[in-house]
Amino acid sequence: MANPILAGNVVQFGAQAAKAEEEPRHAARRRMLKSGIIAYSNRFCTLPCMVRDFSATGARLRMDASISAPDRFELIVESDGVEASCEVVWRKLDELGVRFIGAPRQVAAKKAQVVHANVPATPPSLRRKPKSS
Image (tube, rainbow, N blue to C red; front, side, top):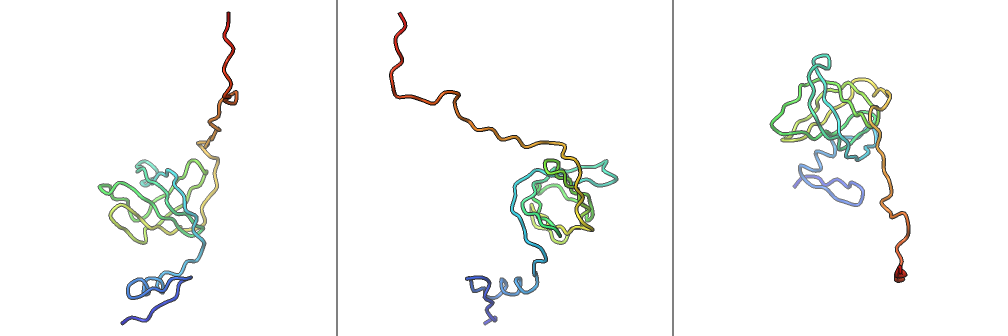
């Protein structure tokens, strides 16, 4: 039986324990769901993706499984104004793990995320409206 590893309040055995030993996190990850662009060939070729996790050193991207991203590319997150040179570390069916080559660059955001409250102009009332004559 493999040696267990205590991770937080969870004991991990076997492959999970080995994976926990091999992958120490250098920076805290921030979970997100934002659209991104994978750009390569001097930004002449692009692929859409979703940014699922983001940290100072890398990111986890989700994309269409039938499309294959190159080993090195630029990641562009327009809503945050972030651009980063990336190198693929791991691949799964529809996900990529990338590490940043250098620090991500902050640029002017090309899109703005606007959130408005969906409330009526006048508050609803349970009183009957007066009949007009």
